[in-house]
Image (cartoon, rainbow, N blue to C red; front, side, top):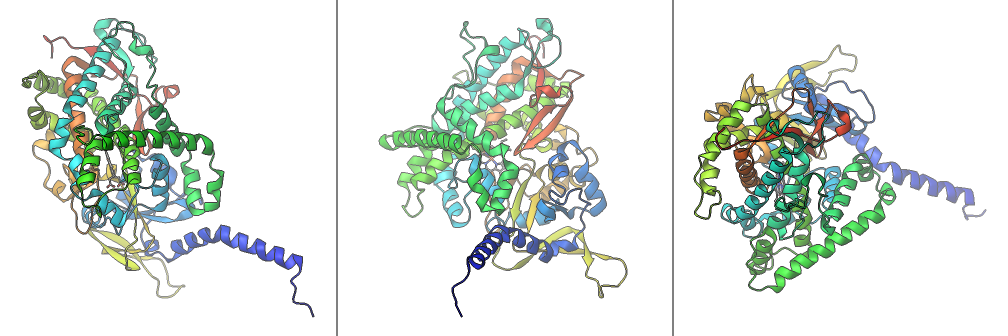
Amino acid sequence: MSFVPSLTTVASTVLAAAIIYLLHPLGALLLALYCSPLQYLPSPPYPSILTGNLAAIADQENTDVLRTWAATYGPTYTYRGFIGGRRLLTTDPEALAWILGRAYDFPKPDFVTESLAAMVAGREGLLTVDGDVHRRQVRPPITSQAFSTPHIKTLVPIFSDKARRLRDIFLRLSEKPSQPSRSPPQPPEKGQVVDVLAWLGRATLDVIGEAGFGYHFDALPDPSDPACDPADAPSSNSELAHAFGVIFSTARKFRVMTVLQVWFPVLRRFRPNNKTMEGAQATMRRIGMQLIAERRADAECQGRDILSVLVRANTASDPTHALTLNEILSQISTFLAAGHETTASALCWTLFALARAPDIQRSLRAALRALPTAPCGDVDIDALLRLPVLEHAVREALRLHAPVGSTMRVYRGDAPECVVPVRRGVRVRQPRRWPWSGGDEWKVEYGVRLRRGDIVTIPIQAVNRDPEVWGADAREFRPDRWDAPPAAAADVPGLYAHILTFLNGSPVSGNRACIGYKFALTEIKVFLYYLLRDIEFTLDADVVIEKRVNIVTRPFVASAPELGNQMPLRIRRVPPSET
Ligand code: HEM
């Protein structure tokens, strides 16, 4: 008898091992699906076995789907994700505060981190790190010093410079017909239509480049140059802008693939554009290293940009707390990804809301024109930041149009299961006593059981528009609601103004939220100051705008789909005699 295995036996063993290796993530997924206590929560019907309710979730901004589901199932329920996996969705304030306040037990799911890592070209920046590394990175004084209010105020001259430049570009464009929309050109006194999204994107890129790490993208042309026609001026020629554009757009394009790659690592070998991505990542690394080296070489480094502060604080810090070189490098692309398009989106939707509320726009203009200026002739930043009508308009726009409409978490605590408290109750299907016992029995409970690996969706936008908190007119742009916000708003665990736009602000045993929110709010206010004092923004009656979400919520011209992601607003110079 021979113990030498035949060639067929070896081949079939290898084949079986390969199949098990390839399919084990699918097995793990199915196991999680059928063992999760989430199976006892209500769930809407789902049209696809492969993608569950994901299409409805992706289009939620243009439909009433979440309101319909909430009306049917209550504020806490599940929907289906990839191959029918259940995900918890809740607008219950207590549940949200509990989950978000335990950030290190509820990190982002792997497929979200993977997607963000591709976008920010690395895993060592604030958006993608977790646990102790994250705790060390946000620990004072390093990162928090760079984003403190006193430091953000030193960046105001940069914000003002870019805002004035954009105002002057808009004033020139308002007098010259251009054609982002199908509307016919109008005489100068009627103004012209421009795609404000694209221009705000250029402006916020210039801001984050200079205020973030002392880099000049020069995405906005110089409007004082008579030879330059802003309508034809190309966007930034900078090497870094190009590299970032490649990384960002490639990472966004292959989101379904990214999900599959998380579950089936073997697919990571087949990433399209690998060579182009590698080239772009190498460029980002080279320029980033150069920016860091310049700051390190300058012992007296007095630069006010965020990177300079980070490098200074890092050098002075206890080495066990300090950021590594790679971590500092990763923050550059992180700030670029996290701080540029989000702020452009926020400003864009604020102008959209004001364009549809001409009376509010007019009174805001009058209030901005009445503000005192600082001795240098620049805006008096303290007066601007304190101005109630501006604060209320910004809050209301950020409530109604959150640039990041939702985010995700996964339960990864030490205990195999946890119970999330819910104030408004959740319907739970009771296990049947016998398989043949009649129909399902449902009970209202005040806790949701989660098993390790269960995914939670944080519906930022839905929470911001929750009629239980904001009343029947929750979907209307009404800045004066902030004169006396409803008492229920106090329960929303928002970092800013009882809204979840920048995520949460009630740390329990670890918390993470937008570190750049003061930067963003100051930038938004400075831009509105310079733009609104001299320019009127309106929306032509035939233009229909929808929202499209690809990480950040962008406008889409539904009335002229060939225009794609644009915000075609009509801009007109407002003479000082008029408000
Ligand atoms: C209106 C503009 C902005 C909005 C709406 C916004 C929103 C958010 C949200 C919702 C998160 C949490 C994401 C999650 O954990 O799932 C976040 C995180 C973050 N944001 Fe912002 N952001 C804005 C502007 C900025 C700016 C200007 C910067 C930097 C200059 C910035 C830097 C960051 C960073 C580094 C994180 C990760 C923080 C952490 O996890 O510890 N953001 N932002």
